[in-house]
Image (cartoon, rainbow, N blue to C red):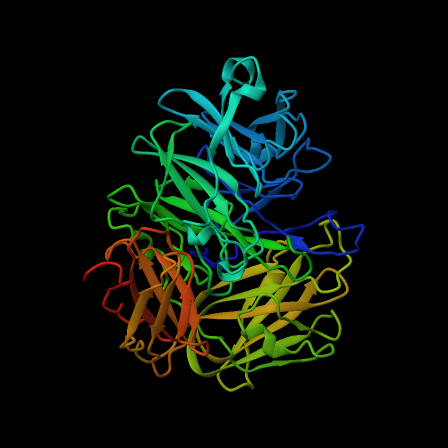
Length: 577
């Protein structure tokens, strides 16, 4: 198979089964709170409760590493940092725990750097920690917080004392950085589409230094909702004071298949390009059942931080050079233009368990799924794309339905074949995972070695571990043979009296599959995207805005052939056009 040039969210890694819900007999794979570190020009991925980490040389092929030592309770939301030849690793904790180091993380070798980081007062943590080394001052810091009561905290660490808290009294070493303010920041409100009055959570601190400024990133308002995003405060000193960035959130993806992108980190690849990682929600088996995503990111000419989530769960190219960040929309050049061909297309299964039917694999909802009557080789899913298309990639997403696995051992792996046909009679194998090394792939993304003209696409099952075969998405990407859709003729945006909200409405386009509403704080800074399907209403109450900040909006339509020209930019009524 040709070398893969693209990736697709959710990330295709071997998400681990774990013991977390063994007492409740709930089995599921999950991954959350990612940190990707560029260490010696190679990449290391750390994720909550995974028993180890992943190593990659290209950001697409990830090898799971089993470390030679590990906390018995595992690691939640670990902090990781690379400084010179050493990788530093620290777990979330409310007790005394050590910082680990490694100069050979690719071999899984860990050492204790300090035996016990001094304990902080009760309930303070450090939970969801982040380590930061300022290369200009050679000073070290830690940030943390995961609560709807406490703020994000920060503290300086003393390198001469093995990164314990600076000063003699840990209780005086830390200070509050900031609290959430959902009364001014609409996107910080809890619930689906920010609709729940419950007090929101802040978590997932991360520090990035750019052009002499310190960007303290945080996740909000809750991991189990589509609006989970990353925000930032900006300061001139690592411990503040910090100012709220009016363009928040910096990473936000409330619509589409993989919704949510909060609690992650920001890192640079080997070309100097920025990326922002985050967590997307599944939530069928357990509230904390999740997957991870990464999105192109950066800083524009005005030092505004952003992450580009437009078509964030469609295939994107991996960069081969440094892109130009001046415009802020530079990462659009990574979008392949391969469109979703499978949305609501007819699906036929070889067998079905109860009412868990094949049509669920094309509805773009990760919490609905098909289950085969038996988990056996030869079970199939066949999609009818309606007409011949150029098929370029597929993604098969599995879900754990009535599973019984609590440890990802050698029996846990994924194998299937993808076949295509123009007439539903003669079939050609275009991908075969039985010819690859065995690994588990809950979000298996397969880029075809060359485009294939086909109307029918078939998944042929070979192997997954456990008693059930359950698939929540069979996603096919490529291009149709026609023209891209027209631009919607009408888009209106009216700011409500409660400035955190705006009422949006738009005209639909014949044949469109969906729409992207794009918005931002200036006509040339439309960094935020909310994706809608054509079969959804064409009105929406957007509840993610900041009080006192004017906004601008535009819309584009998309279908299987491509994306329309972006509409004229309109204001929200709070500013003169």
